[in-house]
Length: 328
Figure (tube, rainbow, N blue to C red):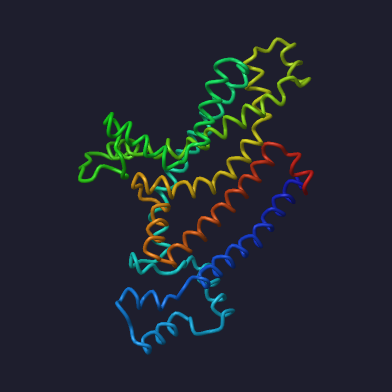
C-alpha cells in the first residue's frame, strides 16, 4: 500500500514540471506570433493612433519586460483567466467552458464506440485467426486506419444524409424545433451525434482491433492458457477470463495516448459536421487570427491531455499493483 501511495505521489510531482513547460510553450508561441494584443485591437477597430496603442500596451502590461509579462500570464492562468477574445467579445475561459460539453459528448461517445467494438472485433479476429472472419476484419481495420477523417465524414454525409436521408448532415440539434420535454431534446442531439461520432471513432476503432488481436495472439499458446483449457474451461471463457486480461494494460495505454488524437481529430470532424465544440472554435480562431483564443485552446487541451494520462497511470496501479511496487 505504501509503495502504491509513493508511486501516486511521484506521478503527481512529475506533472508539475510538465505543466510549467506547457505554459512556457504557450507563452512563447504567443510572443512569437506577429503583433500583440494592442495590434489586434487596432486592426479590429480599423486603425488607431500611436497614443492609443501606447495606452493599450500599458493597460495590458505589454510595455514591461518579458519576465514580468510571463509572471502576469502565469498569475492569470492560476486564476483561470486565459485571456480575452475580441472575435467573440468574451473571455477565452468562458468560450471554452461553453463549448466543452459538446466536445466531451462527441469525444467520449467516439472513444466508447471505438473501445467496445474495436475490442470485440479484435477478439473475433484472434479467435478465428486465419479464417475469412479474420480476413474481413483485417481489411475493415486497414481501411479505417488508412482513410482520412474528413473523407470518412464527407462519405457518410453523402451516403446517409443525401442519398439515404436517414441522418442529419450537421449541427448539434434541429434549428427551430420546440421540444415538449427534455427527452425529445436528448433524442434529437443523439440523432445528430451518430455521424460525427462514428466518423471520429473509425480510425481509433481500427487501432483497437489491431492491438487487441495482437495482444491476444501473443499469449494464445502460453502455459497458463493451455492449463485453463485443460481444466475444461470453454474457449470463450478462456478468452474473456484470461486472454483479454492480458490485453487490458495495452488498451488502457492506448486510450490515454488517443486523447490527444481525439482532440485534434475533433477539429476536423466538428468543422465537417458543424458541431459546436472546441474543435470548431479552434478552426474559427485560426481563420480569424484570434491568437488569444487559439493559444487558450492549445493550453487547455494540453493540460487536459496531461491530466488524462495521469489518470491512466493511476488506473495502471489498480489493474496491476506490481507497477506501483516496481516504480516506487
